[in-house]
Image 1 (cartoon, rainbow, N blue to C red):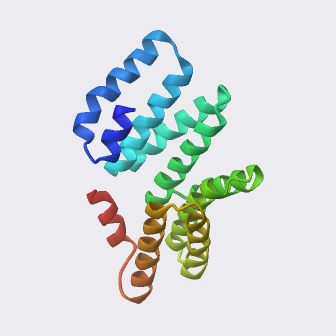
Image 2 (image 1 turned 135 degrees about the vertical axis):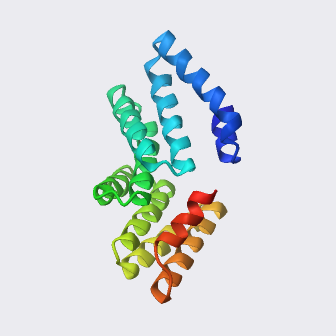
Image 3 (image 1 turned 90 degrees about the horizontal axis):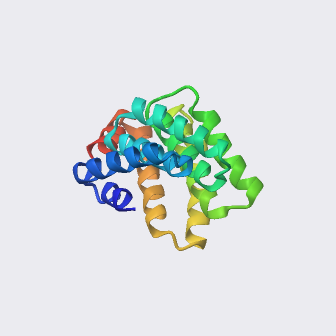
Length: 183
């Protein structure tokens, strides 16, 4: 948990030794569930660092591990993170990953998680040059987020809508992605 919080607080240097220790202990003790989580967090750290190739590889590995041992909730979070890495890396498989995220949320009736799936799907639509579809998805995400008082998620959606609007007027997709990488 300390590693996760340090990453969210923007301190990857402090998180790195703890993450490596966690990974080593999980391997040494053969705890497949915790090892899947350690691999996932390594992927998340790479995602936050803007190393989308490493993030994709690690998150694919973690997703496979979570699914093999039946950790459906952790598998969805990993799938969502993998979809983000794919979208930010212009991966041609990003749309399929986004569709899987939305589909799982619809099937399992998970409106709050669906809001995140719609957010990343909207970013993917924008990446593909479909700003109207992107705005529609992100606006729908805001409705779900508002119903769950997810103020941080609403802010993410508003930021994405601003990027899309700026892009349609005069900017390129690379500018907002450079902003993402700077964090």
